[in-house]
Image 1: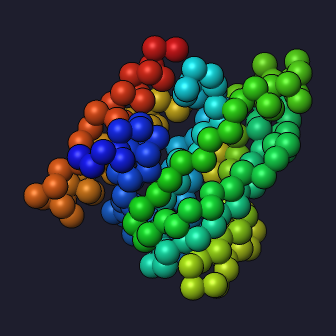
Image 2: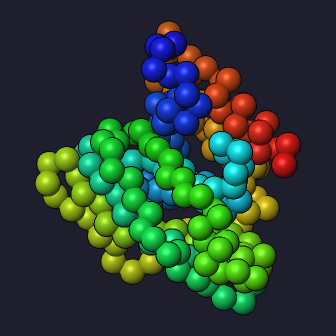
Length: 190
C-alpha cells in the first residue's frame, strides 16, 4: 500500500468503489449521479462525534464538486444544518468519498433539541462535473433518510458490497480491509 494511504480517512476515500446489482438501483443511478449510501449524526472520529455522509459517484463522468442538502431529523421535526455540506475533490466514476462535519457545531446551535436528533435526511443538491456540466435533482427522488441507530449495520453491509464489487473487478488487487474494519470497530466501541 502506498505511503500516502496511512491516514484512515484517505484510505477510505481511495477504497470506495461504486456497487450496483439490481435493475432498480440502476434506474436510481440514472436519475441520481450521486448516491449517499450511509450517513449518521454521531460518528466518533478523531476523538469527537461527526456528522458523516458516505457517497458514491454512479455517473459516467468525473465529479468536481457536490453540494448536499442536509436536514437533521427528530421524531417530530426537521432542522436544516447551519452550514453547507459539500465535497470539492474530483471523484471518478465508480468511486466515492466522505463528508464530515463536527457534530458539536450543530449540537451547540440546537442546544437541548440536539438530544432529540435521531438521524438525517440527505440529498445531493447540486453536482458539478469536471467537464463543466451540472446536475440538480428534480423533486425528491434522490433524497434518503438515515437513522443513527442503523449506522454500524448499514456501514458493514455497504463495506461488504463495496469490497465484493472491488474484488470482482480487481482480482489481482484485493481491497485491504484494515482501514474500514478499524473504523467499524471504533464506531462499535461507542
